[in-house]
Image 1 (cartoon, rainbow, N blue to C red):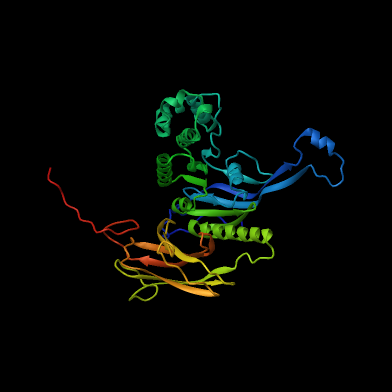
Image 2: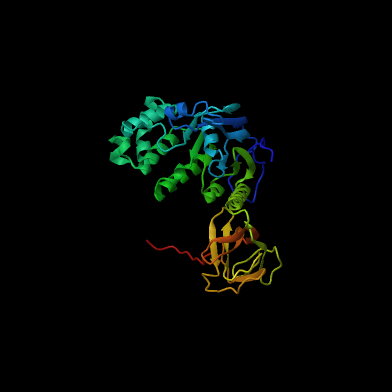
Length: 420
């Protein structure tokens, strides 16, 4: 694809359920043909370099291009996810946007105050106390001493560090580090917030607090650029996403489409590794050839209503005899949250040996999903659970809206007042 694609989403409504940035929003980050080169040293020491000096064919270093000709424009008020396999350049790009590293070629233009939470405890001095590091880190992020004094109580309360605020941070746990660092970053009143996978470190309660703060920033029209390996988190939080592979932009689009593309990238890498490990074997001997989905008594494509019986039919192929296997599927909401899943092992069904192809039908009776769109992921697997093949977003259905409630399930509810 063209890696010069702007991130600006089209104006107007969407049925995706994803947050949307404002139409005609100004651009806050412009990335133009950015490349970043690192030099990797092969010699472990000066002695080794001197010993091998002059040997024919011996290279003491090699170039590694972490980014290649990346061009993006990020509008104000958007939440952008950066996806990609390990080593694809996500963190390098985020550091370049934050001004932590300079690109080898190309330019990056930024507008507004920027707060970066890129590495655990970045900007903290281990021999200083938490209190001292708050003032140090806040000054690095652009706050004056008086401004930090004014916000200090809020920073401390949000972090939950308590009495440890006057302890040297070298004695902090990883969770305490990230809680204090995140608290400082969000209280600098940033226009652009950069977040690199740090939300995976804190405990569940703190992660929820951070996500609530990010949603608050979204409502205030701030720009957020985040790296996360949680695809559900990206789908839920981001309105757009970028997929990087080997330092290049592979895809730019909606968060859901980007997640699908990223999974395709991972599958391609898996096949490459399988071919390299066993070139004489077929790396992909099986596949899901089709998935049918409909409600009994309704035409294909019709809305599903509470109480309907949903039929899921899946068709498989395998290019050699398969004596033992199991089938299954997962249902996800439009935000990437799994709402239901089952397989033949859970259902205590032993499939007959597969000789070339097989078909399986599941019946979901009296479905009570909440209103909205849902996606089916179909798969079949080996006895130990290792997937043979999976077809993501193999089918889609829409549940009729429920005017009395919201969410992914329907529950019969009554309400009454209780006299005081």
